[in-house]
Length: 229
Image 1: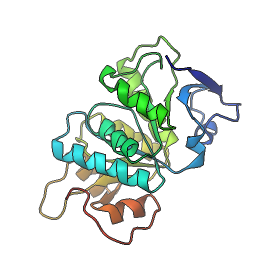
Image 2: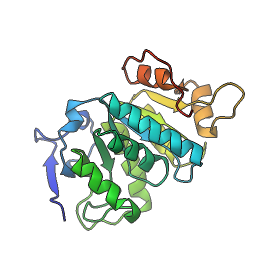
Image 3: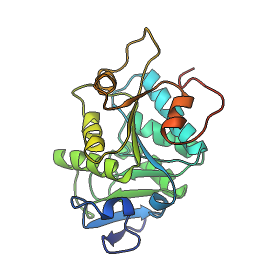
């Protein structure tokens, strides 16, 4: 079993992105290298658990593309889009961060334990505001979404339903004034309802290809490439 460490708001190792926020946890528990949160651009890549194969493939490509450009990919290690984005980043030898809804002594979901191990082995980290022995509860998943938004410089949504759980992360991103991007289908195609709502209400920018994606995270891209080709 890995070593679980902790840091307080007063410690140098505590992420600067959280330190000035009153609602941030007083203590964070972590496994791996927490310093990566201060050393690179961190982008949360999130989406539905029950997403289609198409959007899972897009999430995987986005994770890999961001990693190739030195961006740290973060999310909650959930099934579906979250896991695929992390896997894409891990395969590209990038840094990744997973925010857990319970204690770090037990990975949730268990089916992603191997992915969690790969994250740590690749120089990334697992983070939680809950001590060992804390079981995930309905409210801890929402609280986890809050930490995701706090730790990220920007938030990207691959696939969200208007009334789905991914919208919690979007709401927190807007609350903490983090730029929000959503995948948008090309003209004539129907985008996910949550994505479309956020874009049409001018709360998020539309992203359809790697040029858009890298412009969103502040990286140049000289050749436009499809995210789903």
